[in-house]
Image (cartoon, rainbow, N blue to C red; front, side, top):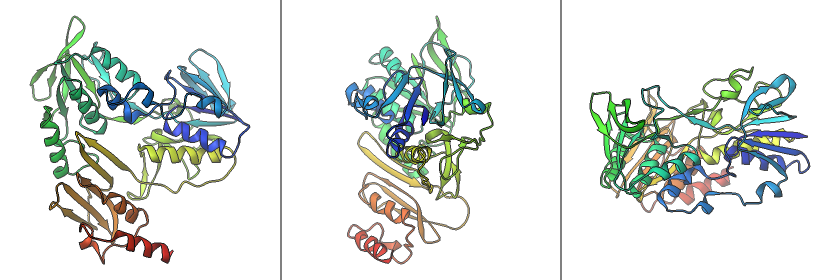
Length: 413
């Protein structure tokens, strides 16, 4: 069997290992436009800040491709798919045939069409080369504008502050981390970042980037305010990288649509990770779930199916575990419910902020800041769909015995 994987991040590695758990003999060719062997994207900000060295960026050993008998084609870009011929075309013009194809192309940065976006000094923050390029030009005391206050943007902000630069965040929403936090939690995170020197411009966006002699010198905001800077980092969002699939018969929505086996609408073509839409068991709809544990599981599941072992992927939900300047945050599921049928339980008595969202007596979302020791138990209750109405008033108590509830569930099962 001839397997070809486009991509080299978490979903791609999951696919490799899923295939090899079933088929130890088939040929696996892995193609990536990045020249680096597989590395951890969440660690990029820690690398930039100097917290970890380059050697710690890699989450598989140097001999990984050799040990798993993989043919790596790193630093090469796929330009087109010829699905009827079961073939890929590289930018060089070379064609590569396949029996089974995995599209693990991940996401790509959203870059707004604003004047000046191509000037020297404008960066994105999604690939390691982006970070390496930024690292080369940062100077202590220089001024950086970060466009976007999502997870990726604020991790970049934290790293930049630790590099000794001045940072101003421009965010179109009225809060930071709007996709994963409610306003109360967002305000606590913003305050923590402000205490470390970060400035915020909310409810506005950059409409133009200025330059002197071709290099960034400042930006203009939607409300007319101008800010001087030497670098601009664009982190306003990531969209599924469906470029290769757009001109084919592969069915798309926001991402590539896949079934429970991670198969696309075209025979022998699979997709996983940030490019794929899978079933979200909490939102009860198909969504892109760009969370590393999910993307690995999707890839592993797809790899098994590609190798002939039928394995269903039952869906999942998003969970984010992150921290800024020693403020830990864990959030999962629906934290800003809309419509009827939800109950919100909130605790502000501890040294932080905790919130649980219920629907039909079951936990469908939770959010914990600072004191996060209960997060694992909340996740278990949510994953197992346990009705918590009989003890919901005790969920935030320090002495609440989660173990008894979970043990009772296991016995019942």
